[in-house]
Image (cartoon, rainbow, N blue to C red):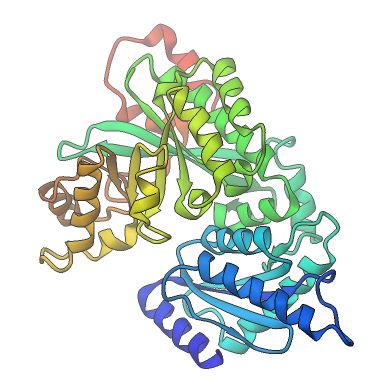
Length: 405
């Protein structure tokens, strides 16, 4: 297993992908010793079968001790690892510690040690959540305490990255992206605090705030561009909440934003094999809200599941866009995803477009929408004005743009 982990870390460093370790141990209630070895064996057999059903094809898994097993994954985000942990823990008496290494960040022993610390946290946590993620900012640190008050203190900001039509580059929509204007650390990207928000239990509050702010702003923008689409990311933890769909619809009613112009972005791991999450999305889809699979092609990518999900949009992962080089091999995966979208009558958006050459090749492959630094980085609301159609709306300016933040 250690050799497999070393190979995975090397492969991840070359491909620019993160590597996750899931350390799986028996739940304390099932970890019986002293004359009950047959019970432990039965539990491990149960966990082994659940893991076999839950893992991506080719993910290495193995026992690393009498009471532990490990799973290795090449992942796009921690959501992929948490989706597997959720499946294992929901079907077997297990506790799971997750540790993730960015490309070139840790060696095998360091990553296993961090997974062991996360497993200990999962076994001790009072909320009953059967898995925990190791992070540089554990739930008891000052940053976690500060994050709990960030929404109330007005420290969060929403930036907007344009989504454009190809080939003309006209604005089709925007993706809302949250930032934390920390009073001492400066403007923090989501990777620095969203996983922490999930661990300390404030992701639902944060998600509601982002949706409210973004939909209120987009409602004002629609005076100039009625067809403007608003994309908002949804955490798997939000989908776990029974009232999530009702909360979304209530926010749209308060802000006056038309449901048919909202696109909720979810990861494949958050919905594949999760009946409760799919049911929530079905309610929202029936209300006219569109659902997008983010980073498509990096998770389960199951065509059998895809045909059953209430999905309207596929977002082509930036890793596949980066491979575009004008050759048939470089564009093979992108072309396959685009063709799949056409067959299933799904919209497709290419993420991470960074050059005119990529935009041109995507157009030739049949892609109709794109976003990335080639067009614009995430922008404050006021700076998005140049993307909207020009019109004589001076009497609405204060309402459209609101105060500077």
